[in-house]
Length: 198
Image (tube, rainbow, N blue to C red; front, side):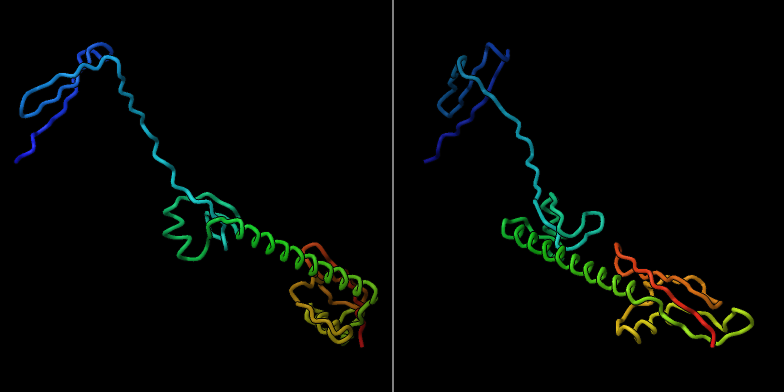
């Protein structure tokens, strides 16, 4: 036994007044008048697909480590997550990042304190003596370099210092000079040098 074919069609001669719904079957056509009901269609906006993430490491053109961002879901799914550069924000992750930031701040503070202590040591030591072979008058053979100062500091104070942090004027004569040691971005120590000829 075949089921009867049913089709529905909507006719409207005028939007507000004459609305009829027609039902067609194998047995015949039936008209249903619908003056009281209203058909309302709402257009739905496409939902934005973004993810709230936190960056695990610096990503060029996106952000710095520890930064909270909203990124598109595909960018997170296809690039940031597989490469391990970001994670979705959770309360546990936020707490971990806060603890990590506090640890980094404490480490920076400790390094600055060590630099201040080392600067006080350099300023209380007095002048470092440098001997060079003398020439005519006050001239010396060669010059005093940053490496010479680093060697003297290591011999007298048993402190290892990188020669790249030493800033020296050009020393080609005997006399007293002042060298600067940039121990930290915020801490600079001044060291006196007495250069004399043998």
